[in-house]
Length: 340
Image 1 (cartoon, rainbow, N blue to C red):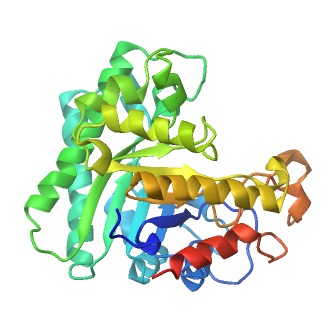
Image 2: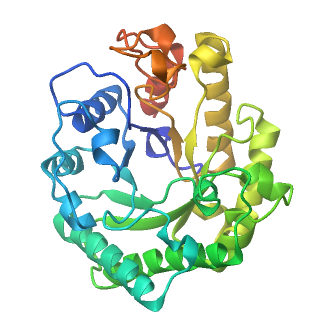
Image 3: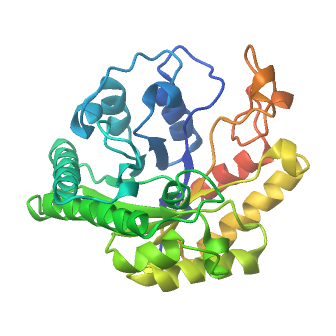
């Protein structure tokens, strides 16, 4: 990590923002805005596309991941000069958490085959581009609990998730094996989000019960359950994840983190928290550190939003506010991305 520049490590998510500024399709409006700020690592959703990127966009129905990758909006994004593109990815023909009831042999084969086809497409379409694509799930602990905090997962669900993640990895492995020296990297990651619960041994968790039985390229932490602006607690969480993830510290990244300006006490406090969390993760050696996010996706009260939101209507997860202004945290990231 000591030899890596911040621009090679620190990125930003762009998904489901509640406002826009141009007539461009929303996916690429955000991508272009991040590129202009100097960002080289972008995280986007490769699922729920009409909801994730609604403005100036007409998303076709896609039956496979390869079909989705061939949609013009994604082709435009993938051609942009980002070094790393992280994709929140689920097969469009199946429920995201269909594996909760367990995975049959046919399920495993189908998942593996679709991931192999998708990864092969990325290897072939973007060979010699120098890009890295990271295919990952979203917040695995919520999925393992069926989206409900109080539900303790059943053994068949834990086993189903293990089989699902391993099938996805095996698909990427197979594509990689047949696409050697392609000049592009395609990696697969598993994401957790209940590290506090895992460290306290409070029921089954992805970290404790799933990850040790997987063999993923990378492991992500969506970091909302612990105060990332408190360095000791954040480091302890990353250390614990590294102790459970096969391959250890070299495979860990922070898939989400942030601080909402209108919740934490204003722009200066947001800036302080973001700086602390980012620097802690850099110093710890996280492979990637992905800030949440470009345009805020969370209103304070969604029922009251009937038109374009104002700054005060939103919680404040942003680099660009609805009025086009930027908080101090944005200047911090620009400085990071230009540091040499």
